[in-house]
Length: 527
Image (tube, rainbow, N blue to C red; front, side):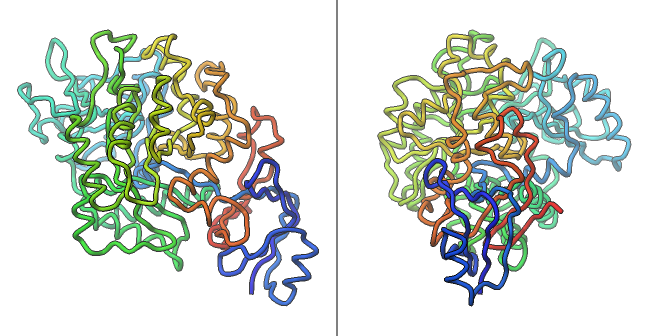
């Protein structure tokens, strides 16, 4: 017995403008698509439920190809700093929050971004000390490649003026000593001093995040969380405890940080299901543009002595790739700057995957012409985050210079070279909404000055929607059963009140999610 979906516009996403009148589903799998009258007659003895779309628009279920799901849950749990427009506003919010803490409790904030402040200067340790010297304070930057800490947090972490920079990181100092700013791997020095995460905390964060993703029309996500909340098995079990067929249905594909690969291989608990599965090994190659730690081939425009930070030495990156190959795992390498992309592409081509799944380069925000052909030599997909264009311009041009704008965030050029791009949010860094991502991919309009940047890199609506439907399925080697509305595919649908292919892109944020369907089950309904 099954369900017949009809009465609206149903896009298959096999080809541009392909639509069908109806879809018949049994046990979470699409059995047939096509003419409503023919399906109704053919399956009349089997239809248990009819769902009339009432003129709404159905797409294959939207998938976020790169996010940090537990981190998104934490964002919903913690003090959120992303929308403050000045240092003074952030300090005021922290001062109010600290009054509600118990003695010695950590004050944790998420998402500060000095580039959106009136004066783009990070808060100094001394300013945090004025808020509290009793409570340790840790504030993650929006990119999660930098954090701010007060003196109490540094004291608990054993940080002194003599503490050295770790490989792949930097402890910021000025003429008067430690500023409280920790970049990339240096963040771990502070994080190791923070309280450990228990199982209920992780599960609560996962539940909050998944419920929020479902509200935004997202049926699944490729997420990287397994090295930051205790052991691999603790976090993995938390996902399995929350997400399953008889609990919350959500397609969760877990990238596995290289730090916990051995733990994963030896803990003996990994068992993929339709809703929780492990995928590529995750490696960081560089940092981020905001903190000037993305690894570039030429210096930053606003810091001529700096080309960024490689997280690993070349021989160490090679060793990590070889480790994954020994386990027949694909690789997902975070690489933002063009020098990091070059390093990633070189090592992936030199040590080709023994898995049927493609490798990934995550972000690839700054490119050079010769790198496209290098990427094409491997079985490599690019994970892009379209809203980065809207959030990062125009300040990112201060980092890169106008001469590098044509090769900045070059989504269209990737597609023109035949390189598959999958779309994600990198939540909690950006807003989770795929509709917002689709709009940014089409318009490339800055949230800050409302100008268009890289007009020639704008995508068509079909290309933009494909980022969140067909491409994520390709990224995990499941294009033959996910990402389209076709016979034999999973019954995962995102249903909207308006058509993304006909609405003016400037008005896309007015579009509402009406239903999110996973495995044929309505997991969210806007009533």
